[in-house]
Length: 466
Image (cartoon, rainbow, N blue to C red; front, side):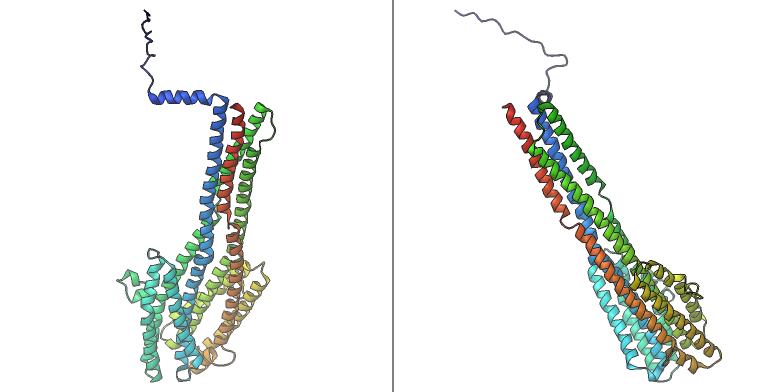
């Protein structure tokens, strides 16, 4: 007969028996304190670090690449289209006044230019509407312009019809049309959506698109601090772990960990160089392309405002000084100190083209044309003040050396400068966009390779403990 001793009762530790999660944590801590457990934990941490570096880099670089793409394909083209919408509308208003002054002797080219301006404005409005979202602030201005454009065209046609018949009411209709173009708030004071002239709405559209362009520039050039910090942290962790492993095993090389370090360093270097080049090229596209373009567009707009005021002053036949005052205000903004052509928008455009021989030559030619225009304007104004209206009209829109011819020379030079700066912008912006090409995917692939190599390298060490 076998006698068994009763089971020994062991009291629970103070506080009761540990819970299952507590026991699991305790077992995990005991496992980690062993060499194989420590190696497994280190491998997990290193893999998570390099994968996080790859994921964050891919996310941040992709956002900057998308912003750079918007600059090239959407923001800057929309900004330039908005400037062209303004220019087309202002030129149509100016050309309508020119045709009115010439009356029965209006050349076919003047009429065709007016119609082309309206057609181009309508086409650009359609294109801009297709490129903007329904929630975009630009839609308000596009809608207002689309509604007002046919109204304006109808007023001009009525003015032309009365003018051909010799009815003085034609001048009133033309001034009314110009008021619609210039200052709609006087016509619809109770409708805030229409409380803007067509040119004011076009200006708002232009400014809205320029603000979006600057936001896209800021997004594209933003430093990816998070991905850089994670890359440095992952690289430091890999190097430090290899040093500890060398001290423990006295083995200099671990192929897997060396591969992981090389892949991480390559991704980090690619990020630094690629983003640095992109920032530099995008800065060049702004400084050497977009910024001069904005100033040239402003100069063309102001020149058209001055030309419109000059023509409408003759249409008014002394009934108001509004247009003479507008001429003085706009041309002062355009040329600043007209004694030497410095200052003003033209002076700023010259300063921005300081390092660009072709662009500077175009702006200098535009300044010379403006000086000629200003002198001829003074002659026409003197004739008008003396009561010689036919001579004033001839000096303004006649043949030979007229203010119209001088204005056309100026506008051609500014247009050529715009085309030149547009090419410079596109080349630099394309380089900036290309510098980010493939970086997001490449960083992700390198991170995956680094994580796999780190786990493989540590797995080789673990195999020695089996």
